[in-house]
Length: 144
Image 1 (cartoon, helix red, strand yellow):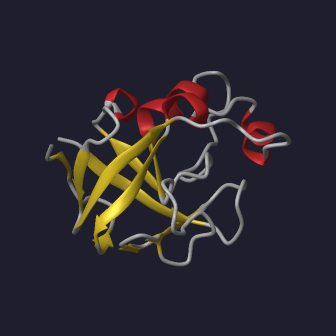
Image 2 (cartoon, one colour):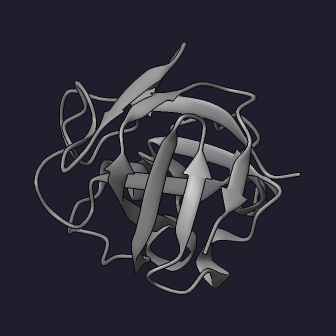
């Protein structure tokens, strides 16, 4: 079963995010209080722990949830294989996949810290269709 492992937030873009107890995801915005949120197609970023574990195996065992600036760290779902347009039930919310991967910006603090950033290859982005709370342990279901 796919599930949420952590909700992560930051006040500025391009830096690792800190874990929070739960997050409220607003339609056409994303995670309330997060620097990455806004009225665009990359409102919420998701990354699987399976991707994080690949970088840990390269000699960085101390990576924490949010190290790659993902809003939601997941387990049990291969995010980057989901087609654009896929709808997901994540906690109370419904989200739609809008982008797979991204270009890592120059001087990325995450790449400097980790030596490799998996977000450009394996992270995904969604927009929020139905608002609600998401917390660790919530299930993730592909609904269409």
